[in-house]
Image (cartoon, rainbow, N blue to C red):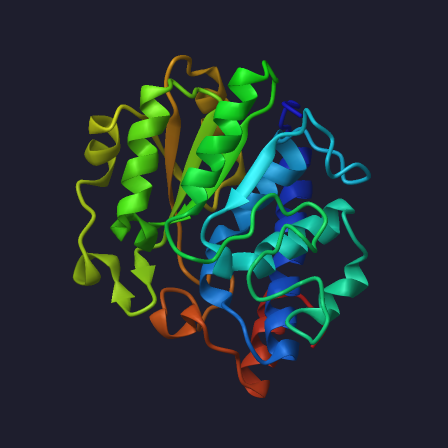
Length: 279
């Protein structure tokens, strides 16, 4: 969309992000299953893309010239579903079916079932390769679209990420923009204890990528950084977005235990109170 971001517009986007966080916590609580931590850390990034930057048509999900978004960290599906519903891809009421039998909103995204989902993801490390293929196809077909891929920082442990990184720079895919949700926590603990990925920015530069960094919870800064990424020519860009796992819910923030944990009844009431939702 590339629209100017005024102070009023930023407030609107922040209000959308708050709604998305409420949806995330409610979906996971009612389903009794899901991944709140990484969904909440990714929220502001997805809101920036879907509601201010990407060219897409909810009424026409397969529009050929649309920008594509690939959620490589597929366990953060609640954030994606909430954004898609708020954008108009399907009714908000459908969020109540998350992880239920027969739902289109499965625990990980399924492109065969859910409008707006570009890739079936969840197996760690595969999403960047999928985005690479879409970006290369766009170049070959002379299409104007961009491909955005959200990668978890724990995914940088995976060799397939670095194979895709090499290929993307080799093919000079400046229509490919990856975003690392750098919350510094993965399933079993801090990233630096599981498998240190530092110096992260230098690694990506060595693989031929333009590297930018941003506060992953400042929508204004995210949009400014994403615009810089779109202006880069001749190489792919990766944005290291510094985030907090569980952002927006006090007892979830920075808590590795809420990678895939459902809040209790009392915790749910606290979360809704903090987010301004109805428990």
